[in-house]
Image 1 (cartoon, rainbow, N blue to C red):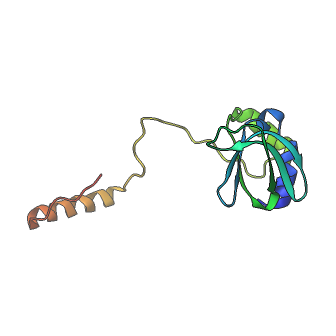
Image 2: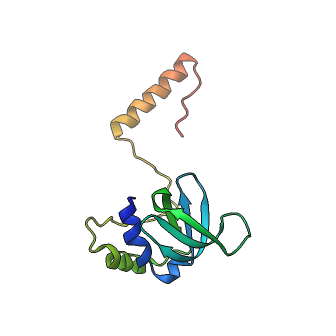
Image 3: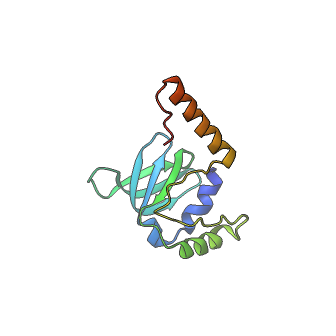
Amino acid sequence: MTTSSWLQLLPKLPQSWKETLVVKTVNGTELSVQAIIRVDESFLVVRGRVAGTTEQGQVYFVPIEKLETICIQKPPKDDEMKQTLVEIFGPVVIDVPKLPVNPEATTIFKLSPEAQERLKSLGNSNKSSGLPPADNS
């Protein structure tokens, strides 16, 4: 994201999101945020701790151009998130369709009938040539 994108986004985040953020910088440092104290043109001031530590309440000055990612640790429901993002950025330009989730699905892709026959013929030729069978998993 650009500096102007961060400057547009950060002040407008709902308070409940701000209290559960993890800020990741371009050098890989992750900060667990308790509160955003200030958003300036060139830096972000947060109270929190370095992820993975227990030292609470430290204050960090993070250069805006060094922000890589911001993660919401306790994400809101999809409807709330969509509504909030519309309030911040305006209407959606391209709506990404929600894919159905089927936990029993194991097929990544399906071969055409021609490809299945070709695969069978390759397996048969390996059997006749004495080569080990092809791994089709």
